[in-house]
Length: 82
Image 1 (spheres, rainbow, N blue to C red):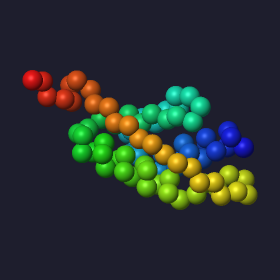
Image 2 (image 1 turned 180 degrees about the vertical axis):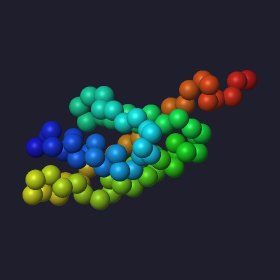
Image 3 (image 1 turned 60 degrees about the vertical axis):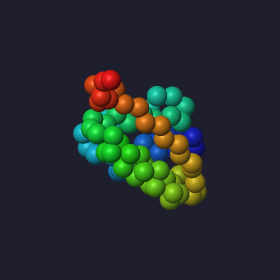
């Protein structure tokens, strides 16, 4: 059942993120979403991801509720230099 849950999580992520965005599983139950854009775009996307997991996931005949946490990281080219 665990593998199917991971598949469902990945599918849910794909419905929320823009088509050109990279979504990758990096281990266990952790995913990375790589978005090119401004900080505001990343914040809005993070909020959409969290909101999308407020609804249960269907795995076989079960409805499973999962929790999410999101961290944001910017690159040096996206951050102004001082």
